[in-house]
Image 1: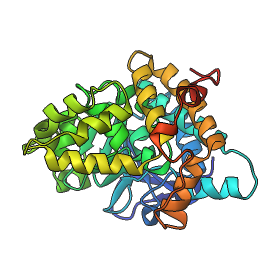
Image 2: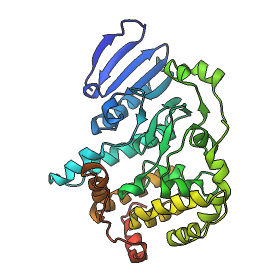
Image 3: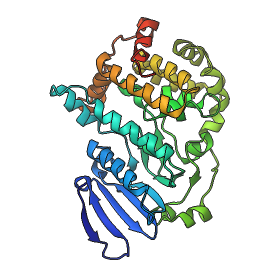
Image 4: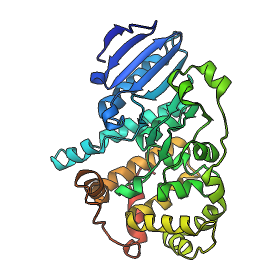
Length: 352
């Protein structure tokens, strides 16, 4: 493990630079703070970051000087916007095969965080999506802030909500998890607390100068004006339908004033997303609700392998991230053309 040790100029903490500077580690009085240090990419996770953090957790588990671990993002915009999908796209397009090893390491790390014997705190102020949710949802304490913008938007790019979402989304109250997984809306701190994807809220000053004692003293477990609470009756009604097509039909019939605009916006979003991956996500979360954590990750690893074979994931990255023409050519292009057999093939990988 690469290390460059240096003493912080204005503090007692020892600061360690790892993964070619993409991780910074500060150790002070039993608290080890890991900073994801790629602010120009919204702290997107490189393979080196994942592998190095996994090695650190292995070492720190048996280090008596380390009592608790804090995860945070560099800069003021994001905790972590997800995996480095640009690099994954290049990996495949350059003929280097499917980057399955990236996901094997990522999912193992996420599961490790869920099961880690020492308390881990995730400071998820700013943008937190995809891989950032994987790092944070298994933490013992999930702290949101005024800048939190949380989402699992994978269906928009031809993927499914992974990094353990089979487990943590499927266990949210009512149909909130299915709504968040299929439609991928961005939510703030109040909604994250309401639906159970965060534990406490802290103000910006308390997050910038975080200590476990301050969290215990100042943390708020609920905030007013949670939009998901207002939408909850409609979400539970529409997303209780027996399939994706039925959900779209139900949303299209919504004409009640409190929910008409939301239903139209949600339906329009779903109609833009990969039809195949909407159906796969529906089935994934149905299965995940009754599966142990480790089985959820095994299922997801099988799904990700199939995603590279099917093609919508790479096409979604091309259309929304690389070329940015926002015109993905999904295969097939409509829900009506997605067969039960094609969906079942995603789960027939010997992983579930």
